[in-house]
Length: 324
Ligand SMILES: [Zn+2]
Image (cartoon, rainbow, N blue to C red):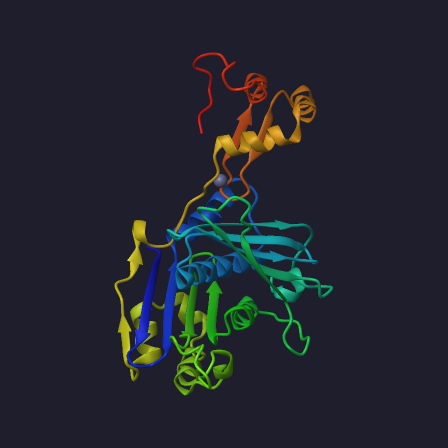
């Protein structure tokens, strides 16, 4: 079962989390395969890492709304998306045009011409009128313009830029498991406004405890992350450290696959295309069929459904289908 483990180190300004997505992740891939539209292996690995990273970032922020991690590419992968709700329900998808070699890494997938971007959007649940979601964007290269090949490096960079906090992230995914380990230096509490006090920015890279723990975390191989359970990994890395663990989040409380698509939303999308456009499709194909990019569910609208879509509420026939 998928699970999320949170932990701290007693007396040290460092916290951490370990996520393993198993059943939910396998479900995502199975749906895609059933739909006859399986992603190429490197895209599967990327999406798995994005799902794991998204869950870690969402629970790290405790944000009331959806966290959307997007990769915009100038290579064969045009777009990859992982969306994680505040209850840790996740869904992922990608838009790929063209061929990819099995060993393709970030640059070959998304950053062929140096224009690839990674965006993190926080979309609050209860938006005030006119309130825009918060979005942060980073390029897919390092400080010396070198192209980054790992999603983990891109996100470490993002966290440093956006939160001024040292972060160590290790991610890995295959077709069975998508997993991640996050270590983060805790912000200085309440000292930020005092004259001469240390600021978070001043501590970047300098906290001894964080550096030691990050070094230990860095010895974790992808293979271990994918094949070992959380107890084994945390013991193997931190057995000499004052590790305090919290009850893992699993099942309904933990990370799991769920799609938020509804017939109602697909209907409003069709409406926004306009009556002429939709009638044209119905004339050609007899109906409109839209598949959800995230879960593969097919929504079909026959001529009667289409008629109802464009009929103002109140004028619809009694008992007409407006199920969601
Ligand atoms: Zn869906």
